[in-house]
Image 1 (cartoon, helix red, strand yellow):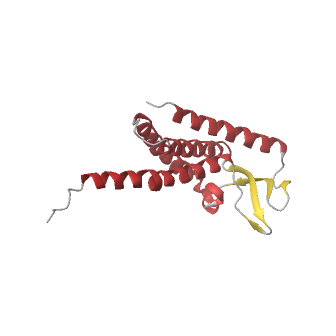
Image 2 (cartoon, helix red, strand yellow):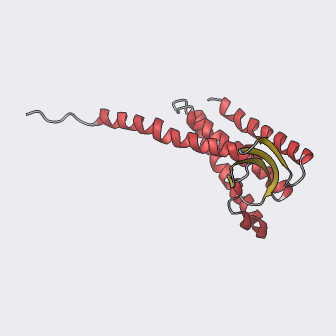
Image 3 (cartoon, helix red, strand yellow):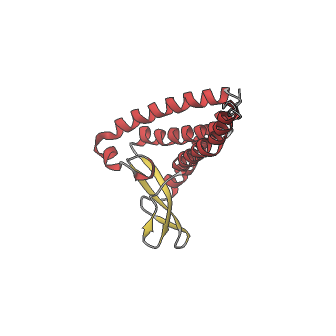
Amino acid sequence: MRSWPFIIPVLVILLDRITKQLIEARVRDWDIIPVIPGLFQIVHTRNTGIAFGLFSEAGSNGGNSVLIVFSFAVMIFVGWMLWTAARTLSEHWTLPAALALVLGGAAGNLYDRIAFGSVTDFLDFFWGTHHFPVFNVADSAITIGAFLLLWNLWAVRRPAEAHHSDSTVPPAPSG
């Protein structure tokens, strides 16, 4: 069994909590700290929805309980998948890494949702007046995990399945 995938969620949770605590302690709500003018700034916001502010209306209208239950269910499912992938030494590294990142990110945001009723977001990328939704370390881990999962499906599994199906096809009749 591989043990490294179980370290990743812990590291994500720790990095997420540390960065959120720094923002919560040192930056007032809606204060802006320019980092790269015209591209990136730190802004302290609270998100009642899910990643990148999606469904924030649902979270603010008493839907927080639904989001908490949904997050728990996702974490149980992803945790089970991670356990299975870590036991299977034949899995490409991208699958357990992706699942571990998603699990850590979901746990980081779930902690905020349970403790505070919303999630601290602070990373704000923009171009002119066009802003990407403000996010945090947990959201980043979930997004990177999702991309790794897609990579695993398209770049790792597809060629392996194509190679496997080629080897099981009987030769064409000669004649």
